[in-house]
Image 1 (cartoon, helix red, strand yellow):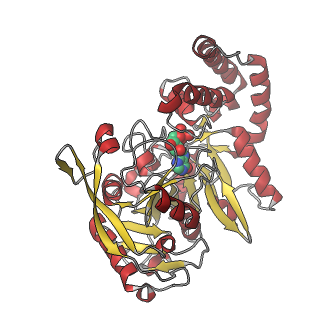
Image 2: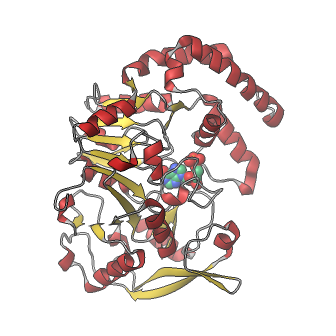
Image 3: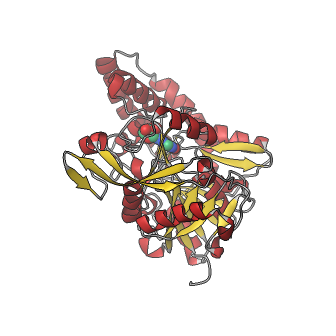
Length: 434
Ligand code: IMP
């Protein structure tokens, strides 16, 4: 395995999402046979260039843009059927054939309109304490799954099971809507009718995808597991409660697809050369307003799903090191180095300080995260454009020093550096990924 590309790879976001995974997945997908989503839902948004056009995929793995690749939506994903049908329609308008190339796990849970509504009503009721969710119904759907009140694709496939499940679940939802939110109920008949129609449309894609992937692995097909969001939004390892409701870290790829851990050869983490986050929650290295504006503009830092401006800040080594640890990252990909090109000096956060105590590792306590002072080291900027550079040795010395320092702090090698959104704007340090 030493000089060849590993067979089965998990790719995760190592910050708060939006690291630019879409471009790297697109690069790695070319050399993979199967591309698999394992968690999240249409809260994610991967922007990929399709010819001269930018296409945003929320649910379908972006590997679908490459002919002959098989794309799988695993059991750990929550599926909004309406959103999925829209994406399928968009792909067919671009003449991309998905027949026999797209499969959704029969065990995946369905996001219903009541999930979306409850997400929105809960957020509105929280006021200043809101999480800043995408309001796509992700949290309420996962909560139902864990509460054993969810409805899976396989349940929808069986009209008798579906009728029974929807009756039970809707009775509870309608009571909740009335008692807590004073909101009118959903009609069972209307929902039942609508989703019975959806049954026929989704049926050709529904499979036992664990079997499908097991067969692929036995045939030594290359499988790429694409994480959505990022490790710091993981429900277990993120800045709880300001997280999404799934395991965005590498562990999620196993539970979310049925793949054995013994079959995973490599876990790659994607970071931005700085940090961003969307929504509420602690962000110790957040920029002051002027710098925020500069980086947001240069980096086009607006959410792919909600269009919200992203919060931007300095690279936080505690965040990224935490990701190296919980994901077992063996390779790092650094995105958007070029966004930092004009800065005269750069800071890297190497520790936090709170109430006289120094934290070298990412803390779990939300109060520490909200109030900690970052400890920075300062590095000179390179103030030279890097977006045209294709080789490591051609990077300005200060850019190389900055990247070397990141790798040393993370104790993981950097394999790829991205200096622009185009496929060619990529510096391969590890030639196996070229
Ligand atoms: P939810 O996933 O819609 O429940 O939102 C929970 C938190 O995760 C919010 O802070 C969202 O902004 C954030 N979030 C969800 N999906 C993404 C993503 O794809 N990129 C970045 N942040 C996300």
